[in-house]
Length: 147
Image (cartoon, one colour):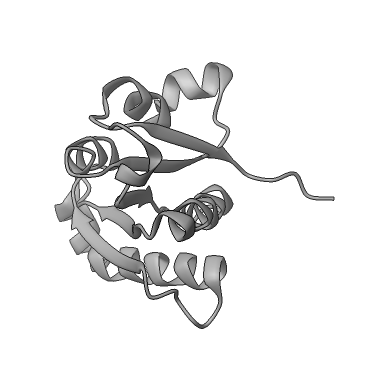
């Protein structure tokens, strides 16, 4: 990437959190002066114990993930989604999916949910993994403090 005008596609990981709403807003702020496209990407997967969920009547994980994606975009932009913003729902684990998506992106923007410290060690961190393994630059956005 030679200069900022080389940025044409910004991929944003969306999970419904306040941090991902802020990541979408920041990505759009960067995209506008660059005439770049923003791809709001949400991931879903079938849990390893899928048969147990079916027995309890819990399924349609993709449907719920699509709803979360739409709700997050609406929180970020209101009723009128900007023309340069597209949404994409992909089956797969967020870490692996976003690393793969970073191959074709010029910038990856993620929200940091704040599971640092010991909890972060137990839960793992998608943003940390992407900072280390993405194929493009990564911007990690913190949720603004509530006043």
